[in-house]
Image (cartoon, rainbow, N blue to C red):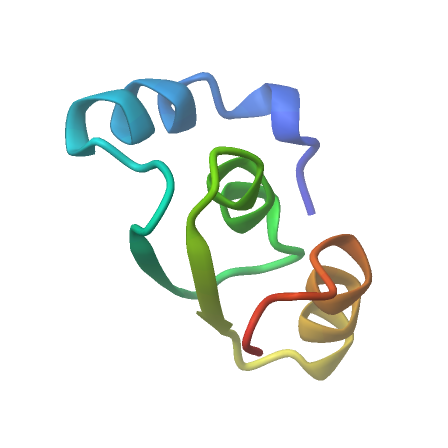
Length: 68
């Protein structure tokens, strides 16, 4: 599980794809929800899935309004 700051490309992806209010994001392999947290802060509705339940639990803790 890497820290969010280890993923500077996330901001570039969010910028290029126009993630913001009203956007829906599906993060397959969401891990602990780092990208979903970034997207949610921009106003996106986030959905995430991962094979490891403990990671999904952490993602839910970080973004309680997400669909996990």
